[in-house]
Length: 200
Image (cartoon, rainbow, N blue to C red; front, top):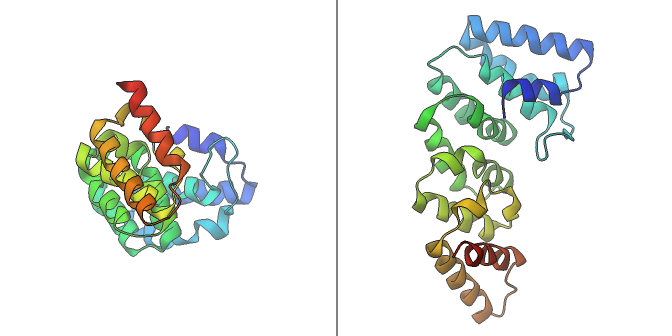
């Protein structure tokens, strides 16, 4: 995923395209402008889904491009956009993390999102950035959080690559607890366990 991919996925009106281009220039010159532009993205470019980027919306992509325009070092400004944003804005920050070049500085945002029960934030948190940066324990707990709150494991980037025996143990314990309580075990649990078996 690159900023060029995000631009290519957007199908904007000339007015929306001009707003985004001007917004990126303003943010590059003065990062404080982000505080006004970031919340406005949904109104300016729309909130519809992007067919070429499953799970992304137009405002997600526009906000990611605004963040990408921030001069380096940008971790503090990105964290502020997350902390001060509503849940749609937080989701956009989480989705943007793989393209922002933050190193490990985005991990506190991922961990914060995984403490919530907002399925949109949990799903966004477990994207490519978490797959590349979260330690094994944090990543496994992120997968388990997805199962707990009902986020499809298809949202977890690189699940097949990172699934391991410890994750299988945790999921097996979860399934046993659900069955003992007479509750349905999500199909995703069985899918994840199959992935571990395939890796063995």
